Amino acid sequence: MAIFFLFRLKAIRGRQNPLFDQKVTRRQFVDNLLQSKPSDEIRSGYIWHIGNLIEIDEEGLLFAAGRTTIASKEKFDEESGNFLEIDDEESPFTYAIYDRKLSVLAILPKSKLAPTTKGIARNIEKILNSSPLSKNSEVRIEISEIPDPEGFIMQIRSAYSVVGFKMEFGEPNPFDVEKDFHKPMESLLEATGGDKGATNISGDDLNRDALESLSRSVASVGQEAAARIRTTKGDRPVTKHLKGDPASFLIDKLEIPQQAAEIIIKLRHRYHQIRRAIEND
Image 1 (cartoon, rainbow, N blue to C red):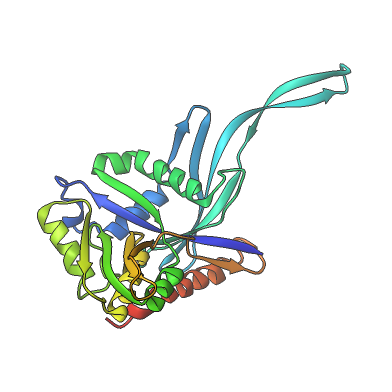
Image 2: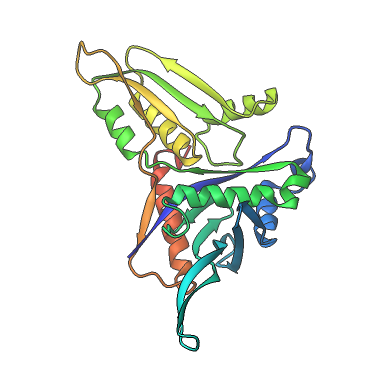
């Protein structure tokens, strides 16, 4: 059995760069970037790579991410009868599945690469940002965890009252946010030339359905949210955060690339579970 964790991959343009206005969409740019198979020495002696790209379907792409290091190993030499220390190259790697339409990345953890999947994602982000294609185009790649919003939503639903809600937002996504509130905030950010923004809502008891929709929308784009809640009447409000376990899904038996099509179906299903309250907005 194997587990994949979900991340949002964003291509953020430089403010002076007309790249995405010249019929090169974010989707096309990221696809070109991955297809270029970038490599970079993230830190001394640790060279990270993107490789093994396989098209799964019209929207899905499988690739491998890993690093090359030179490690000293101890070995007994039969000919000389001596123990020796020799340099040997190691190249541990893991797999990632990317959905171009959703801009969602599923990463398989591997402890030999990083203690956490977030650490692997951070290094993939560094590889992509170090590419000449990103630098010359003045585009920054951002990879952020998609948190599982269910526990946060449960706390909102079960609270005596919700007296405050704060959400963060970033550059506009093509389609994939709650449209009544989240999308206008992203459009405002774009119009003012900002990179990130946040908004606060307060009241005696905020509407739970609307807050769930916003929470799912914020989670789906890898941003943060917080709610001020009273658990019982007369309590002082406490702050609960959307941050928590990253969204994930399980694969019973891992065989790559044979199972790539099955894995991307599970990726899409899990992602739509997160967004289910805003599917028809």
